[in-house]
Amino acid sequence: MSKPDRVGRVDTSKLSRGEVIAVIGGLMLLVGVFLKWYAAVSVNATIAGEKGKGSYSAWDVHSIMRFLLIAAALAPLILAYVILRDHQLSWPRGEMTAVVAIAAIGLIFYNGVVDRPGDPSGEINLRLGWYLAFVGAILMLSGSVMRQQETEMRRKPPGTM
Image (cartoon, rainbow, N blue to C red; front, side):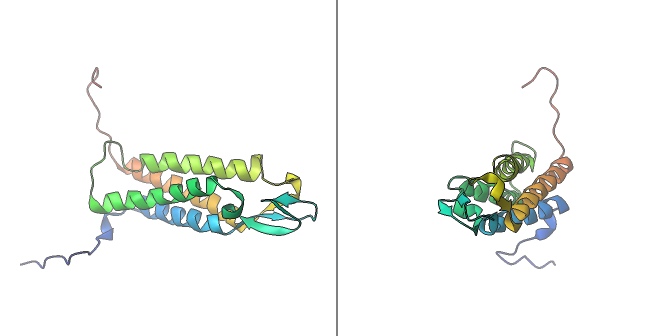
């Protein structure tokens, strides 16, 4: 006779390596939003409405993007919840998390490399928080792709939608 599981006990054996990597990446992204992303290295530099030397987080500088990045960081946690609860989805598990991770990578890369905030942008350097968030988003993508490859897609017969 087997013992019944206690109520509220979570069986984490359902999570694969891909989900664990994606969750770690999401947590890194979440923490990275609150760490310093940018450092003004000149007294003439202006960033986030402040003039002079100083360090600023993504939370300080990006008024809308900060909420998008927090929502993106929650995606792998939601994926892990779906897997732990064994919910059925109409798309392969990990696919939506991969899309969200790609968007987060694009936002972080654009705002750190292509169009760095501040004036002049050459006087603004990147800090640890930017790198942590960028690596976290890449881990989210790689973990969700690993999960997506584990899930078998059902093939439909030709001519059906």
